[in-house]
Image (tube, rainbow, N blue to C red; front, side, top):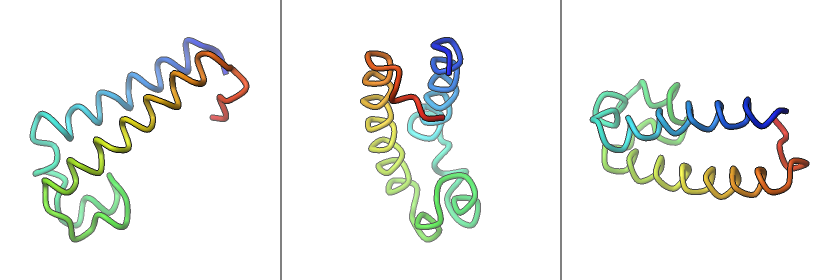
Length: 77
């Protein structure tokens, strides 16, 4: 995968996480929509729990993104 595509995927993922965490996306997603947009385990979570989960996933993906920038063999998708 090229560096440009890798960065574009991360930017799109970051924009989605930013919307969930900071712009009320968690309130909109809470309920049955969280099954499709977050994960199946988030089905009965409230907005604050969804925000925390997305924040942790975003931080983990940031670490993975930086590692894959340094070592291109880690880019698996």
